[in-house]
Image (cartoon, rainbow, N blue to C red):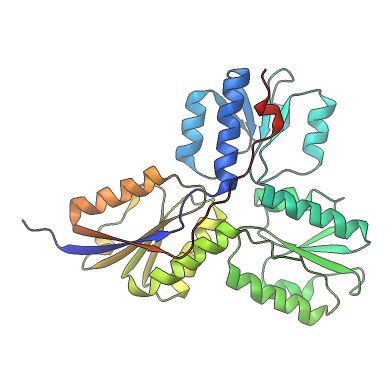
Amino acid sequence: MKKPPLTLYLAAPRGFCAGVDRAIKIVEMALQKWGPPVYVRHEIVHNKFVVDGLRAKGAVFVEELQECPDDRPVIFSAHGVPKSVPAEAAQREMIYVDATCPLVSKVHVEAQRHADAGLQMIMIGHKGHPETVGTMGQLPEGDVLLVETVDDVATVPVRDPQKLAFVTQTTLSVDDTKDIIAALQARFPAIVGPHKEDICYATTNRQEAVKSVAPKADALLVVGAPNSSNSRRLVEVASREGCQYAQLVQRATEIDWRALEGISTVAVTAGASAPEVLVNEVIEAFSVHYDVTVEPVETAIENVEFKVPRVLRQPA
């Protein structure tokens, strides 16, 4: 039986960003240097396939530092941690490696700089997300106010409207964040923002790539994890750009083929913590059902690379 034709638009950039690449490398190099087990506080990145692969090599994932023994190395995830976490590790004389993405660390430095200048911080982010928890934890409790929506801006209780600054989570929707920033600036004209926006290059680039393919695709699939903020934003961007069916899938096995009946074009992308092997798996799954023509759509070229911490480049 002849398979129906399908054009598959492959969005680029997609998948791993420099911060994720560095975080995974940190765990692998720590295992090589110190041998297993190496403990990791929180998922190193939000992807089950990646986490399971590292677990198989000897990484032990825990939620809190209390679950780690004093005599084994511990790694902090790419999302960043409150200041209290490395302080506790140092007090326990643990070997620890901070895998926080340098672009998240930049936001941490920004928050501290504004606080030192006597400004109260407002953070645009998602409550409970590890990155938000880590950034808010750079300053004493209560010093950072969280807003998630434009509506939150109207009611946020500030100490002094003349002494405010804002930072943002790095993985937000560029368009949603613009609206929240505009609302903050309208209510607090004196508010100080970052010199350069906090949303990272990879988040912005992946959203722009989706904007370019979504309008011409009957369906768009984002390969990524349900707890990955940047992956979920890609689904929202696709829907906003007019794609009738936009879905998040962790693996090819999650594709709902019945929902895709009758389509002739599909776009595929991947969140910043999803490896390319899972994208290839999805393309292969489409090839089983359709006569696929793959059309790459590239909107930017990424050549960013972050160095791993010095401790891992030194012999044990």
